[in-house]
Image (tube, rainbow, N blue to C red; front, side):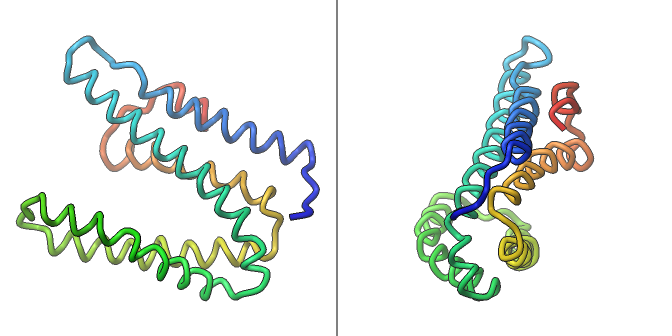
Length: 171
């Protein structure tokens, strides 16, 4: 991309990775020795690892998208990404529908999922690409690590998950 990778940018990304790792490690050990506590800790760790992997994947995706958003408007790039991803995700959705029985609130859940996709994901992507047009990808990459922090905070505030000292340190 021809960007100048400064020491400060490398430090910011390294701190982001270290902070995300601290957040993930917060859920690694069960709080007591019961099998349920171990399963809960494993589920939290898996979710946190997925947040970190998603952040890393988005960073790589942003680097690849930089030349594209230099040529096309953010809304067009977001629309194209959606048009490409929907057919790739549709088979998994079809399998999911075939192997599960919808619960009573499935219509509401589907509407909320569509709203999340249109609102947070699509609008967030357009804004991200607009920012990527104006900033270096290596500079913007550090902001991706806000996602694991947000996941832990929302888990604490909305789901009542325990806020571990390692997660606070990772923040």
